[in-house]
Image (cartoon, rainbow, N blue to C red; front, side):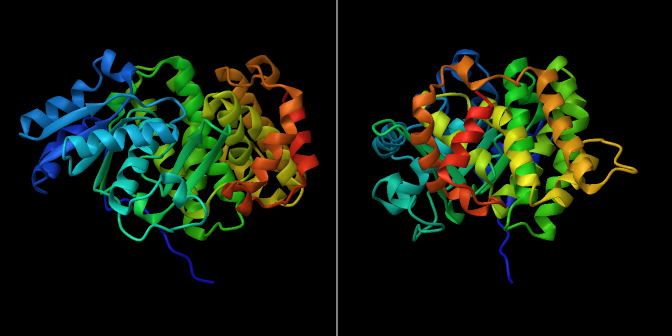
Length: 383
């Protein structure tokens, strides 16, 4: 059975990587860029790393800073209106997954027309490449800077859905670990657990290949070794560098092998309660993993080894359980092992979210198919 592997044609990575971006853009002769970001990054002046690089190379730009933590359809429409009004021919996202997803929606619709929702009914449905997109990443988690995914919130019906299209890939992705030093400890923890979830779900996905397996396992190893340090000492550039490679590798894995029920369920929590995506993944990952380990115990035994568990003399099933326990212990150490009820999630909304989770595209590649009742039960276990 054949497979296709997608990733950006150029990725600038490591400490100081953004300093090579201006020359790359200048060589392509764009007229004006729309920078898609949020007000926090503008207020903190972190965006100066990007705007200084653009100014140094004589590249004109305008800033759209209305991105919400769970970017909405309206976010994308507003950004598209500014892009057209300012006659921009390039989109640059600056931030984490929210900025990248919003920018992808703007760029895809700018080129293909219609509404972003038009591209959510299947996979790779856009007819044309999006307007050229460059992604500058400031978090080590979502990997949206290099994937074929964009996650969109529909505020009207309280749903959150993925758009999966090869045309969402940027022409250049930038991962500069120096830009990640400013991340607060809890954001570092939540985004790190998001990256771990990407790697775990891709490794047990029904669409996994030897290529996605290799990058998923390496991502898990790096996260297991370095996430604690990145959370406890955000200025540790070695840990930050390791985490930016880990989240990128995890992105390579899930962008091509897709995901599973953790993400399908987390999307609904974001749509209904506007909760942080990484935190939702961290809460759901151990229980969904236990559910999936009943049919993928050998795969979870591999994950245990990558997490640093000594599996010598353990049965495959015991090794799998030890690996999941190690994931849970990591989450507890860094403060993401919370309960949904403490975040305001209500029992009477669980069935609604479970139904929508099973419609989510990420559910299609989960290794063990579930009923609505089983999804509700998984939610209940982490209430």
